[in-house]
Length: 64
Length: 173
Length: 128
Image (cartoon, rainbow over all chains, first blue to last red; front, side, top):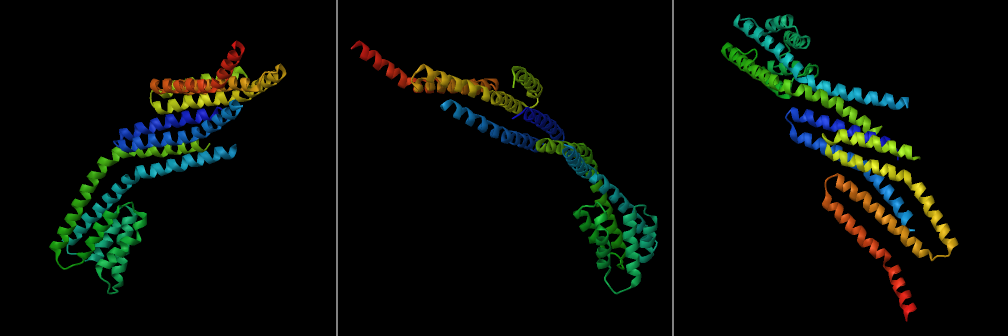
């Protein structure tokens, strides 16, 4: 669990924002919203693995 | 590490090229339609001068600058010279289908052009000329539509291609 | 992992979050969550050794182990609740954050009830 995931999430966030702007400018707003949502789902998918990992560790540690 | 860099360059390049293909496809369709328009003008001219279809298609194949369209008419000319007894409509659709893959036209364009085959080489000059006028009008309206769409969509497809490749690389890195 | 590295990770996260929050606020929340997760995950080994040390000391002192474990449990509940509620507040949802804190208070009371009961019994038996 290192800092590369943070850089990946930030890069995906910026690229999805740019893609959003391009699609809105070309008039296809529904597809812009869909790509934002898709980027969100992908990032959520990464983070949920980390969350479950960490909270399981915390749970076993503190339930003592 | 080097393999990752190579793979990411490959992915970005391929999706960027795909984006460029979709961006410039209407442009190539427009130039093909323009060449076909010129071919139709020459055909109309030749029909007005009472020349036969063989001579007319030969003249067209010589005068049109686009290689593929001139080859269509050259093929048409060769097939007509063989005098196999096939119908003109079938020869027309055959010669179009042979070069279909190297042109950038739509399916709708092909259906309209193939529809012209029915009246080619018929004895009624008036109907031939009217049908050619209809086809020319269709081509002009298509070109107008393409002009409107092209300016809007070109930037979009270029950006989508490049950015999509970049996102995939970052997601898989 | 030393404090320097953790501080630097925090700074990098904050810089990225500030730049992304205007164009893509959804991703900014996830980014702050990820930063918090990374820092916490890297603290876990140190936590683990602290807790083991405390249990060893408690064995030497001859205190009943369940009291020590109750304290550690309460610390864990408070910590997780604060982690989640602070992220909710940063995302602008103060209501959800206060519900999480309420839940934490309830769980802490529930965890400490046996000890309070035992204390009252002892005081009772002393007085009577």
